[in-house]
Each structure stands twice: as structure tokens, then as C-alpha cells.
Length: 250
Ligand SMILES: [Fe+2]
Ligand SMILES: [Fe+2]
Image 1 (cartoon, rainbow, N blue to C red):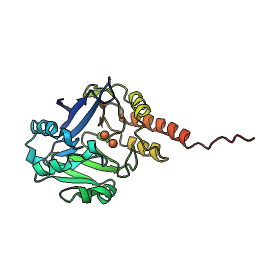
Image 2: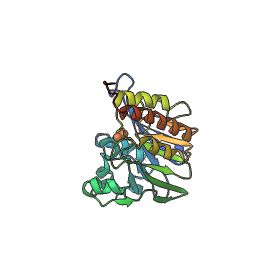
Image 3: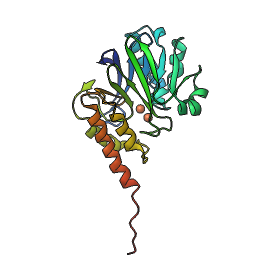
Image 4: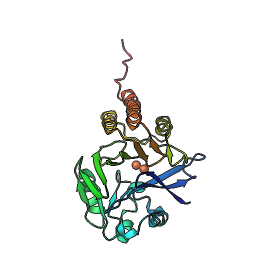
């Protein structure tokens, strides 16, 4: 395995590792994102077992000890499995996550105390970069789920939303909704809940120019339209799942 590096927006790097053995023959990618600034930020730590690969990839971009913020979408191995490894090699680094995530997991699991982010709170990274944390509970899964939005580049780091199979290009302006529907059909990874469509539609108001997928290519284009279409598909699924059962009796 190798970890490939591409700049998908100004100062935002995608570190991508393709694993052909997951969901063959298409395979599956795991992406971390590194946002440069005076205080560089990582979104997703990667799996613990991928730490050596990701560490060497980050080292090709910045000195490891410059890493300042460690963030992720929800508490799960691919999102934050290597958190303490990163905290160990970057003495200035601090994990940051939403209130729920800190209360239920991070206050106990992180080797150093995390920064608790309120819904909508921003971290100024310097160098013109500002990231905004947005709570998305149970969307696509995890009570503590949230996403990050980098304001200067209008880049939404959406975590597991839009998960798709395969090893596509680093950046695409093609369709990401159809592959995401296929990914949901296969994996059933989302915690379908009545608020899901509204939560995703709320993200569309950010009108992102780039959407950085954890499992798939980054998307450049009309991010609002893609998010609305994804929200519509989840509304369809949820309306079906929660529809009142038809009575057999007349
Ligand atoms: Fe996940
Ligand atoms: Fe993931």
C-alpha cells in the first residue's frame, strides 16, 4: 500500500490510501486531509495500522512537530484510531471535537485533554485558513458526528458522507451522488434517522466549492446541489423505512 498526496484546494492536501482487499474488485480508499496554516490541522487520523504510511506522507508536506490540531468526524477506527500516535509525535498537537464526542469518548480516550468545539465554532489556523465545526449527530452515523468547513477555500470536509467504492481521481467534477447511493445500498453504513435529510440539506447552505470525501474523490463543483440530491435520497430511504405498515385488514 502507498499513500498518495494531492492538493485538492489551496493549502488543503488529500492523503489517500487505497486498499484493494476491501469490497473487491473495486476496493476502497481512506483519506486524511491536512489543512496548512500557522497551525496545521489534520482531519481524520487514519487507522492505527496505517499510521506509519500516513506519518511519512505528512512528513513530506510539513515537519511532523508543526501539526497543531487533530480533528475527525466521529469516534471510529478509520477516523481517529491513530489519534494518540499523532499526539505522541507532535507535542504541540491537541485533539478537537464536538461536545458530545468529548463527553462520550475523547475526554477518556485522548492522551491529552481535547479542545471542546461548540456547534458552529471556528478555529483560526492563521495564514488565512479558518475551519468551522458543525454538529451532524447520527449523520451519517455516530452520535458525536460532525464535519469541518474551511471558509477561505469553501471546502467541506464531509467525512463518511458520499462514501463510494473504488480508487477514483483525487479531484473530480463528475457525479458523486450516484456512487454514494450505490455505496449506501451496499454497505448500509448510515444510521437512518428522521433528521438526516434536513441535516445534509442544512450543509448545502454553505454552498461548498469543494467537498472532500473520506472514502472517494474530492469533488469540485456545485456542492450545494450535490448535498441537496444526497439529502433527497436519504429522505426517500427514511420515508420508506418509517412508513406506517399497511394494514392487512380493510
Ligand atoms: Fe464512519
Ligand atoms: Fe470513514
